[in-house]
Image (cartoon, rainbow, N blue to C red):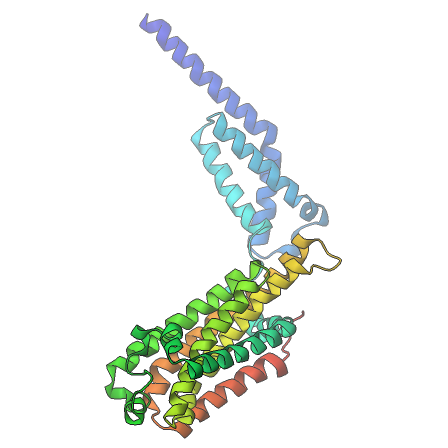
Length: 343
């Protein structure tokens, strides 16, 4: 009985080995050809690759990927599986992987790609800007008619000492001498967190034809209008504007761009023109994604300005100078600098 079992086991192993060898022999030429092409491309020897091999590359990749799938299903030997898995992984990066390094991508992005994408949504930027200005006006008018609206827009937790009825001296204390005020740092962090969330949501909600994006922009800027009304009543509007200006010209610009990016997608969905909806949306989405990658960078810059520059510069003129410089820098980059990127 043991002899029979041993013979059966030996026959099974021999059959499996034979099947593995036959599988390899039938397909090995394609594997070797793909491996040779991939190796040359990995080493940067593109000139040594014939046009015939380049044209055959996608088909060879699919053939080897199919071989790997069959090898897994039929439980071929481990060496063949390991070889095919490594080859398919290498070929994937050659066929579908990124065509440029991170350094090259950053050079293209900052060297004109980002600014070109921003100029590509110029109409939506104008719409978003108009809506944001309207939001400030709405917030101001609401609280001027009924101060209770202030707490609806700003919230009691965020407001702190900034409440209707506060003295001018108390409000002035919230704008100056920030180095000794931990509460101001907390408020600044809350404000930045709120604006960062608005930036992300403004973009993400653009798929709903841009309507939620518009409402979000109005609501967020109404908060700024309400606070402007409060400081105006105490004769501190200019000082408040400078306090906001340090980081606000960057942070609010980021909100403007994210809202415009969301509107760009919403407009492509609602008005695709002569193109299919999916094609129009995909094109708008690619452009908007480039804009949003830059928005993240702007929010990081705004956080640094909010955490350091505004704390260190404690006078109105200096704050306006910093904010004005940043606004001029962003406008010059987006609308004057063309770089070498192609649209």
